[in-house]
Length: 520
Ligand code: BG6
Image 1 (tube, helix red, strand yellow):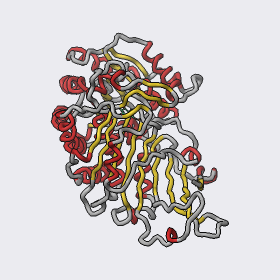
Image 2 (cartoon, rainbow, N blue to C red; image 1 turned 180 degrees about the vertical axis):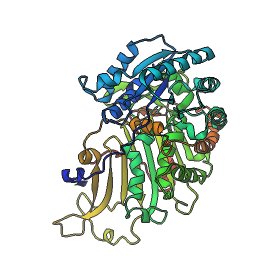
Image 3 (cartoon, helix red, strand yellow; image 1 turned 120 degrees about the vertical axis):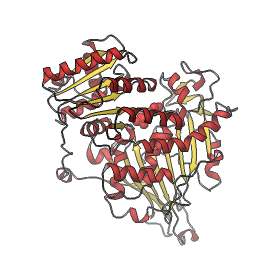
Image 4 (tube, protein in one colour; image 1 turned 30 degrees about the vertical axis):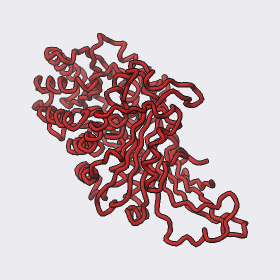
């Protein structure tokens, strides 16, 4: 397929506005569960990127909190994480200054007395460094510790101090079904006001995800056709080549639906489907997303498919099946693949099917949204004798590549030159992020951490949103739990998932797009 490349010229780049240069007030960021992978691989590299760009206050401290008895080696370990995972040069002149902001405090999450010690330590650091009373607590622990930490912060009066701005960031999973999410919301809101609560979904930190709003609402040409009159159907795919990466016990309880569909994929769906918010402000954007989720009717079980990978070959390597992964039940019924069909019953989308699928150990890593448009009302060209390799008239397809090969492409038909007949060939107009803006080492947490420090909740989930998406998926999870799948494993690692997922689309005359990624 031919491709037209769209690039930003260097002279255009110098015209681009500088990033929002808002700098939070001096404060302390406290990371609970700091000895885990997330802190080293994602949070600290992201914080250093902010520091490099002078987006953090000079008077700033990061306190890692976890159960292990660590000392100065924590800061040294974070330094190596920044270099290894943040694409940072070990000799970066700003690195030492940043690492000097990091310290560690060992704490037993369930022990109230430890929190009094933490409070004293934070006060000590604040007075030593001349930092004010602002605090951001980041919960990166296993979810079973969330409630205890929140209650202890409340009991020590660290959640509602007399002075300063205090906020809490809570990592996913936020609950494991509707009841547990409601309970957790209740426990959180008993200690923190909703405007202090930042439920994080790292997908919303991805540039390509934020760009969905820009693409739709900063351009005049797409919105008029962004509706059921012109759109045939939408597919959203989150395909990973990775397996469960040593997270067997976590994944056994989660499965693909809880791990990826209820959160990341529903955020993507909402950004594709929402009505234009009246402004790019937290309340407006969150309200419009909520309306999308509320307009989705319950999902019939026949519109869902689950799968589990068996052994296979991924990227030329033999890999074991899910049931042979470390610390996984050899008879596990947990799904590593989920696919479903849903509809959004409002004026914009009534009758347009949305197909979602997420899977581990798939053939290719690709997170993509594709919007297939309806065919023209009259196909005059396919009445002619078409010949050659490109004689197929395909519908227009807008593909938004969230990752990797970040970009957007639009497929349309073009006349093949020099042929006597009207031979139509699909071609692509392609926008490639890296070609246009250069490579970025940002991991998405930069924006979210900065927004949380600044108190901007636009890119975070509201309690109502979390409960609405759980309300949609809890019946599916219950139905699946009541009937152990007989046919697991039902797809080979390195394939596009179970065959039965194809039937979800066949009845509507569609098929999954498996040519994901950038077209050369
Ligand atoms: C996490 C899931 O939330 O998202 C993981 O727990 C998954 O299982 C990951 O691999 C995918 O994120 P990304 O950014 O790599 O698409």
